[in-house]
Image (cartoon, rainbow, N blue to C red; front, side, top):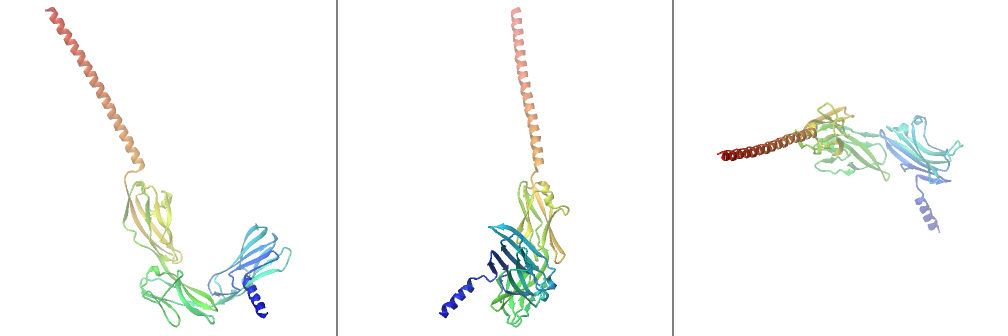
Length: 368
């Protein structure tokens, strides 16, 4: 009998959502779903509460733990009436998290006319101090060592990751014993990015992010591109740097090409707008095209230029040539007509003279 009671209790616990509470027509669902969440100092933490309730003017709000965080603004999205229920989403964003933000945050539902919540869903945020290294790429460095240590009991290092891929010891990476620092060898700008040191804490993972940044660099684009009138031309700009730089294009260092020509921009090697597409080029497109990459973090710019050479005739030149050809053909046709007319006239005149000569000969013969 005790076994059955214990089994039913376990089943009941398993089927109740940890962070979703629904009763009396009221449902509160919070993200993240943890009841107790470890947050690294200096990082951004977002709390989301999705609420469903029966009355339009009911209130849904995040209740904050103490006065130091009372001035944080909450963003509320009201979805209105959906399937007979009202829905709201309330988002609370904590920037540059610190111990001052630690505490219990409750998503609270307060019915219209009420002064205190009747339903709540609570998350406790715990601040975790961290020591980490953030480096910037330098051409003179052959290696760089990244580290991230979290100050929390029972935290066990698990692995280093980049772009969700595990980094292993080898020719490129070395993970040091002891402090678990990551050594990156044979450096280049492609190594820049976000590196994650993952720790296991009480059966959960805790990620510490280290930034290895690099200023903008535009690689050589070549000297020129040759095209024919009417072609579609792609000009690619290979941009390095992290965070990813912003790209602008210039024509003859004076104007942006989109103000002059039919152009579009595409992503190239993960960089937005790094491919310039020129559609239906004419000789007017001839000139220098400059790709300029800017990094707000470094306040630096890198650029390269390439010349576009379009051979053939523009539409205006083609029309001019056609009209000139028409005029020449018209004059030739007129000349031929005049020549034919002259020939016919001379032929007629010759026949008339021949008849007169014959007539004179006949008269002279008669007189004799």
